Length: 548
Image: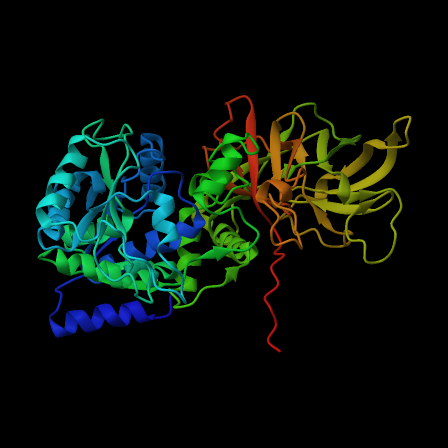
């Protein structure tokens, strides 16, 4: 459950005072990559806050930089957000407002609050000063309103080369807030836009476009992460001086930072472009599409995000804390089946039939509505190699060994009598006998087995490819080490195994492989060639920091 946080308090006070009847929020990504787990906080919270108080949520793409943006990313983000269950009322684009933004910029020009500047980008940087030194006013700062209007119209008409002129707001070159030192509003950039084509050769900067978009849409609470706190004065300045009829309120919260994970769309894109990962949906990434492919349920992400709430500060969160929520959710909802990932064959020498028999078992003993499944038992089986040892090492060993009986889960007691080995001394087969009087549920209890292990009947088993994932990054004590330098070459292992036969999984469907972990069907699968991704291990490796 989510603890009440400061933004809920603000919204409740605004409704109580009559300032707003209900909240209108938005998620405004730039379509230059795929969304990742860090974005999920903004997506889920913007959606939930609007819905919980009777408002609505917009999805708006901030497509003001055509060089980096693509329809591929627009479509991927829509798919990811829909998968999260965060349904938007309006699908919007910054490019919907290009004409309005241009006209509002002209309002600033006509008020004498914006001017066309001929300084290069490097010259603008050099004259901005720093936190201890005021900036230098541009030599073009005092152009007349008429001249600025003509120059700005000519910028739009394409009369000047890229990078030769910008439109800058006229605010305060001595301001202690660097964002108020005559920020650039428009730049000349000839690039084909994914929606407007070649209609425009000038594009608004984010700090100008974003507040106008919020105001146009009537956004009441513009929620953003803490790095925009210093941008709030310029946000408010643009809304005020462009005479926008609606006045949104920007509120900042702590960004969700995941320790030792590749975050930031530009960093992920570098790995994708260099083929260092298998695309944006590589299950080792924490992109939403990668998590979905891995088998992470959207509901588990919601639980995680709501549990963290919306803090005013930010710090790194351990990814294993996230996996705890995934594990807990799958523990409640995933069907349970038998899978064997490192198989060793067992031959039941006294089993009378060549055709296996069919037993029954629940998919989840604590969730009967998940139904029952067929569990086959026959002359040849597979068990996990780790579940057998030739000689019992000590009393704590509660699995199988020569001369010992164990219970095969949902089936019978079996006793190991002989092992067959290859030339290297590795066990290839176990010969065993079973006791037909000990069928699971028969109440047979006059002797106690050494433990209970799972198995898969060989004749009905389905062969599967299983992909096991570890951290994509190796630890590094060098704070300047790049993600490429830290890549773990062993972050993915592919093995061959078996699952029980009475299972017909769907893409992305997750199961608990008994005693092994949670695994989900990868879209690479075919009906005759299943591929499973390990979502999370069965046991947690998360260790909360102890309080000293």
